[in-house]
Image (cartoon, rainbow, N blue to C red; front, side):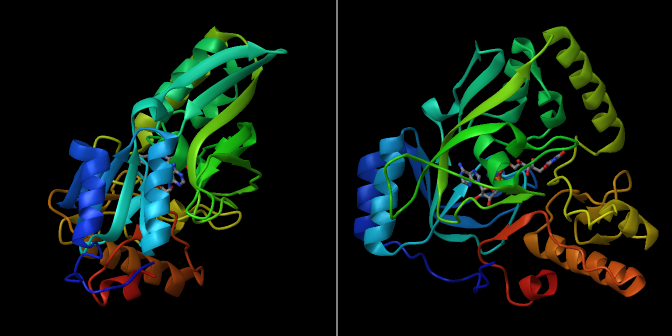
Length: 322
Ligand SMILES: Cc1cc2nc3c(=O)[nH]c(=O)nc-3n(C[C@H](O)[C@H](O)[C@H](O)COP(=O)(O)OP(=O)(O)OC[C@H]3O[C@@H](n4cnc5c(N)ncnc54)[C@H](O)[C@@H]3O)c2cc1C
């Protein structure tokens, strides 16, 4: 995590801004808040927020970052992120246009999905189910993009990485799209930190579409009953410790309903923190630290964050949650 002063000035020079404006026109915004781009509805300003619509546009930004030594960050749908109230210095990239495309076909008895990194998982799972992609029901209800879900190895009883056949990435040192081998672990992967996923090929066993849809529906119903999906949150905040459920430990210390400012531990699912309206990153970080401390004192278990903390946190707040 990057801990800096909330008032730190933009890292962009006038010529950087001019270049970004020339390349991206209305698809670049300067110094605007990122709250609207996260499921928590929290996040300070980005020096520049750019929407790249092609691999060549990603490469352009990567080359600029390399040449100017500018930091950058890639945003998916922001459903696993706590962005500091001080925002993010450098360039924040979102992917749009052709990166949202999904194609499905059957090849040698397998359902193959080719998806751009900004395709959303609701559409990916729906397309996969229609094609009879067995196992894709294990990815239903995850409100992320393909790129974010690969980075996180998102999942439930099945994980994204189980289905990955090939991944194409770009980075400042190698801006042209190239494929990489990645290993997948519980909610993290060996995807290099400086790699932007641009597209992914997934493969599934071919089954009966009606059967996949039915399994998917059952999972969605269960999710609605057990998770506060209508409120702004980022899903589970902490990873499950080996052989244990983080939610059980958090509930056992009586943390359901605890609040800091407008952030509250969900009364429905103890591992979720809801923004009740106007919560700051500081509120959430303080609550995360309080929950973690209580679980550690009672059970001796150090909960690990599943949500990624990024950007500039006001002094004190980040140290408490780290
Ligand atoms: C209501 C709710 C329920 C959820 N349920 C689940 C669940 O059941 N299982 C689960 O695993 N998660 C769950 N999540 C968490 C979240 O949806 C997943 O982690 C999701 O995969 C994140 O995708 P994203 O596009 O939102 O990524 P973001 O939150 O935008 O980013 C997450 C990380 O991925 C990186 N990233 C994003 N795009 C790219 C890219 N193109 N290339 C490289 N890196 C990239 C970001 O830099 C960041 O480090 C839930 C969240 C919510 C709000």
